Image 1 (spheres, rainbow, N blue to C red):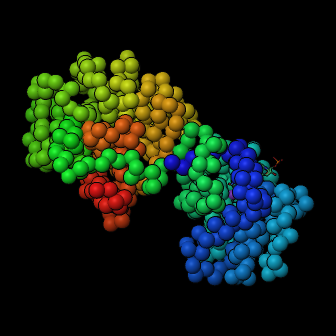
Image 2 (cartoon, helix red, strand yellow):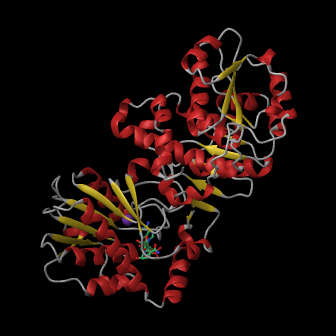
Image 3 (cartoon, helix red, strand yellow):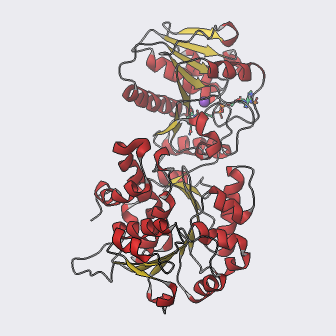
Length: 491
Ligand SMILES: NC(=O)C1=CN([C@@H]2O[C@H](COP(=O)(O)OP(=O)(O)OC[C@H]3O[C@@H](n4cnc5c(N)ncnc54)[C@H](OP(=O)(O)O)[C@@H]3O)[C@@H](O)[C@H]2O)[C@H](O)CC1
Ligand SMILES: [K+]
């Protein structure tokens, strides 16, 4: 997993790393600039337009100057726009300012006309992780003007204005792309910042994972390379019992589709035997739609302990016999997955919280989460409360959304890196419930089940949206679950 380092620790990280690597801070800045340019040249291979690079007084501005020098080798249309005289800027800024070649024009921000056309590039090196207060004066005015001009806007490390670990207060540069160094800054993952951050690219500057880990603050990004090692291996003599017997409990009149999608997802994720528990009178539709699922109503299941895993809540509604739910949680002594109305019922009956088996996985979206813990001001508060809840009840909280966050009982938080905007569609959450339940039933540890569930779910959505785009529906995600195993080379 890739460690996410708090902004305030980045300068300590830099110091420790350059001493370990035997390089200077200027060398590290050069690596950052080269890595940014490598990304740029791949993304914009035929660029012939002007490139305006806005450089603030710190090392983010220094990165901008080094980038300007690299660009100037291939074009004469590079313009550096600076805010402070070099002698008032950071040491590495000064070194890079002195190295700027003659074919780069240098303009003080006060003399800049903001005459930028739509094909030009606007590169934001005004502030990075060193920002320590809301923008004011010339910085605020200039960024407001830049947000009004056209042009392809790219931020270096973080859009100027956003603090690295907190929610924006005031003005911020609006980027189409953010090229961030080595690890995503936490605040890039906040929904409040989506319209400023654009697409994120992580540019490698050679600081390896083990080194990063020692500066980590219990926050991590889940990457593709983390996933194969979390999967169980099955042998050629495996039978359907080895792949788990799971049950999805939910459904109500008009909402049986949620159970249908969760059950089908569990099958597509690899479950050997999938059962569904739905209200009497609703079973025909489910049996016709997914003949592989065995359907029961409440009177027919004698012993829930026979199931390796349970997914509780899809389409359940709020008219559930709460004593049934209480008994279900009290008597089942393995981790369960709880979603949707399964969570809403707990919010209405908070005494249920302490009955949830240890290591269970709750998968709320933001509204369900806030019903559980109270209204939150922003994502920062949600993440804090998710961590507290996970620790207090020894459960996993999967807070769904872009960069879904898994909060663990040990206080660690893992952010998912797959998925896209097209997945915000009815039933997407039911699919995830089915997938995590399936992994639990196959004998995965709850942490592995949650991580594999969110990663494969996001990946299935990405694969489906290649052809479906905004026409994607939850059933498309299910159809692409098998292709995620192919993508990750998991047999
Ligand atoms: N390992 C890495 O990730 C590397 C990162 N690099 C780049 O360096 C920046 C961080 O550089 P740093 O110099 O620490 O910080 P900034 O460039 O963001 O700016 C700090 C200066 O800005 C002043 N400041 C802060 N807030 C404001 C404000 N609101 N208005 C005006 N001025 C502000 C601050 O001075 P003060 O004394 O006024 O507080 C600093 O002068 C990182 O983001 C990367 O881009 C390295 O290049 C490579 C390694
Ligand atoms: K920036």
